[in-house]
Amino acid sequence: MKPIEAFQYLFDHNLSIILTFPFEEEKGHVITGKGICHIEKIHGRSGVTLGRFNPHGLIYHLKKSRSFQANFEIKGESYFCVMDGPTVSKSTIAIDIPTSLNSSMRKFSRVEPSLRSPVMLHLYTPQDGTVSFTVQDITEQGLSFVAGSPLAVENSFMCGLQIPVDKGTFIFSNAAVVYRIESSGTDKKTRKPDAVNKSILYGLALFPHSEDAKKIRLYITNRDLEIKRKVQEGVSTRRS
Image 1 (tube, rainbow, N blue to C red):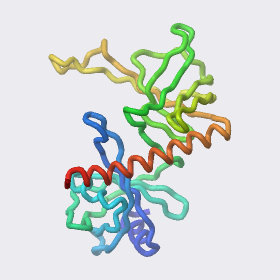
Image 2 (image 1 turned 90 degrees about the vertical axis):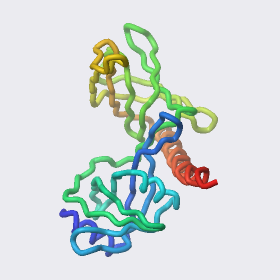
Image 3 (image 1 turned 45 degrees about the horizontal axis):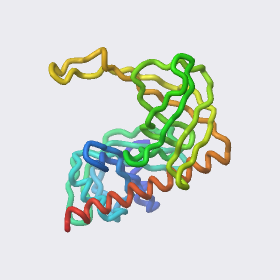
């Protein structure tokens, strides 16, 4: 589907668009801010006007961003695109229609936990016994975390998750590694790659019991609402 066709469909059917952007929840802790909007007007084949932002403070954060991601669904298919160079007025944003769209395979909402209430992952390893990691992001069926060295885990294994919902919930789930990305650290003095301080980003697929999946879903819903509230509160704080 061409971008102009997609945006025309969204406009004709009054469908919402999910916008995501970098949001500093706490100093040094950047997560993905979220909000929704609708297309107010289409300008020929080159641009659109976005409006009806929810939360209302969303437009303030988009004004600060040079670009943001638009995510939407059309006829059961999910798409996303990057939108650059917004022109922001009091209640709307005028922006060029992107030149291309990307199909999205993601079916579940993904959130990044807060620093103050993290999600913790616990694994058993033959070399070190039980090891724990702070989860970077989580969905109903997967999560990611960073390790300082390779982990000796089987193709399929059991893990424990400590989730900040209902005053603290601990669940077990079958899991499997779906990706592993190594990266080198940077020497603070020379700013050159530092092999000693390298890290490994792991992605796990989760296979929780249906009752435990409900608990993960509840956490994700609550966290989504928390982020939405903080996006709005951040604007109110700056105006006061």
